[in-house]
Length: 201
Image (cartoon, rainbow, N blue to C red; front, side, top):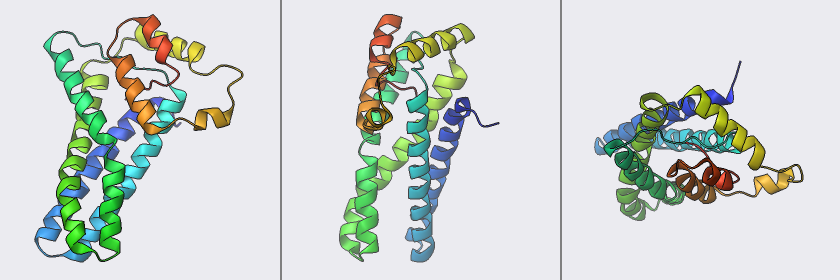
């Protein structure tokens, strides 16, 4: 049976798939194989769209997930998360511009933008997998912490008066910023205050 708890793993799989497609696309264009390059890059874009839909679905229904690691690994995690989050906000715009230039046959402009889009897109895809591994595999929450996060989310995320249209009004950058605020504190009260907009990775 499909469960929301499986979405983080799905998201990591989609990020890894996007990475493979991007690298394959780059290799094929270096070999002047434009047709296969185009297939790979369009597929990578489609996979990234699926990722975004899955990501937002998970955030829509689930409360925050806090990183439990301490010491130097905590600093490393948040350094990785912040860089990933900032660049992730740029990827949709860069990818759309790059694909639009190619589809319109504006190849000089396409190449200029792609020089920025490819490394940023790759970095976001790879670090997305790393964040998943650190947050859900290496330093997972205990059952008690998960229950507490779920309770706080249920108590504060959406009031009974909140309509479906209100919830649909959230934007991806808002999710990303709120996620960083919630993730960087171990204070349940602080987490509860931002659960309305904060989401787990």
